[in-house]
Image (cartoon, rainbow, N blue to C red; front, side, top):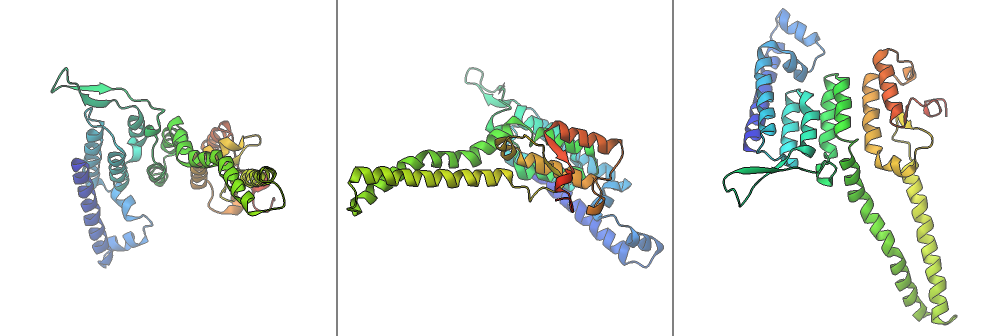
Length: 310
């Protein structure tokens, strides 16, 4: 972490110095500054393409890469976050898929009591919940890949983050398990509440009132919970260009929603910006993207959901 913090500090200093020089050149009344003022590139893109700085940027990027792939370095979420931050600052995202794979597969070092002073390595389970890439890091990596206009890289980031079994297991464990546990305890809570309510009435005997009250409460909770689950899994207001194919199970729609949203971002970045032009894109790359989306149970530009076609 100390090494990665030093590299990140150097990267930020490099960007700050470059931005100051760029601002000074824009303030000068010279033909060069006039051209810079007309240039639509951002300081980050200028930093990425500036020839004198290219070797320095590549050197910092390679140094961070060598630190994180060093065998004794166990990649924790904080180390992974620092690495993504460094490469995002330097606009060097080409190693993200490899490092995301390493996060799940890289053997963990440990010292055995039988051989003191010598490191040994224990293989990891890539499908374990601990091997899931956090959503914020995956979205940051995808943003940088889209910024450098690299479609194969963006798809590779998708394959090593949102589409992994570890990510789906992690989402189920974090977001689905608590409601499931609450639902499993609902009958006990309903019966306990019905038993207490039966003590404050005189119309029926306690056992009959408890049974009727329990049935009503349990029916209400089940009906409302079912409607809520269907509403959650069938919502499509957040979809822009990529939607689910007909027949996709609701459970899978919910589990893979982050994957669909990321693919939606990729399609929106490569397609036309104007909504009235959506669906008119052509070219080999666009057709390959459409087929790639279709294989995964999704539809690009479903006619029924397009503007004016409801």
